[in-house]
Length: 113
Length: 113
Image (cartoon, rainbow over all chains, first blue to last red; front, side):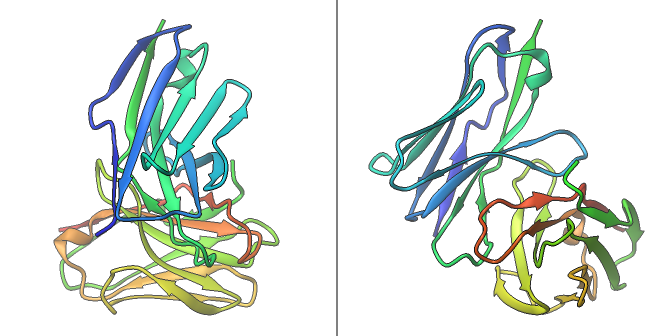
């Protein structure tokens, strides 16, 4: 069955450093992959989308890579700030626009001042 | 804020009862998806509604049902509640079936005792 794995342990980094989060998947060929941010008690907020034929996407301090051979996506936050502390979710989607996103369990990032 | 609202914010029910959760989409969005998020897990896709018709469903039993109204607001109904139904229920709207970005509401926290 389809499986998505994100760093299960929380990631603690110092302010100003680059945070790198990993998303690995098996038994799936996604048409695209999305990253969301979720704060406690809130719904996920869309950050970035990358398609199967794209290698890298950037938005301000965020960068996402997508390697369909390794079946892996990396999510980077450069010059991290305490306000970046949250849970980050990766989500895969197949073709067909069914709206069905398959989410990983999320990685909690803590940025210390 | 995404413009997607959900009600109620919290709800406590007992096993065997029925519950109705409501979602108001972002203005102009005609597609709504519902997700269940257990504590410490990523959201799981329940189903999607497009122009008042269900057109995608995840691995949830028939006691999970929904409706979408002409104004594109939506309801999630769960019958015969079980303890494992305790979770955060999220709805997400999209401008259209063909759009990939989903805008999530804050969720309804359901506790089944």
